[in-house]
Length: 136
Image (cartoon, rainbow, N blue to C red; front, side, top):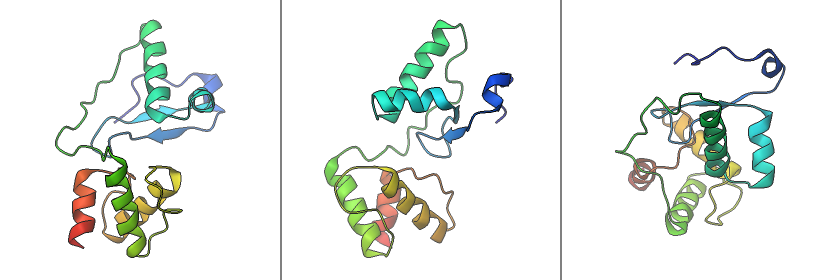
């Protein structure tokens, strides 16, 4: 998927990251320093993404074009995330501790597991990922 518009020269000098909030099958966002600034205010990826999309809308830019996948929902309870962390840890993947929080270290552990299973390494904590861990 190519960018919808050229990258502004000022952004070309900034560190960019690709954000895949719903895994490799959903929309991809190229985020820059402003996104990280929003995260310092409220350390929620969903919040920072919403603020960025709202700002883009006010500037007259198009919204999300790639549909969000609906057949593989994210884990959304502390119990599910705790189970995911426990199963990853039991299989030797470092999640930085079992605390029920889906943070950076848990996502790194997910990516390591995905790599070991020859899956796309998107760090997406989904119901299908948990089912795969239960079956492994």
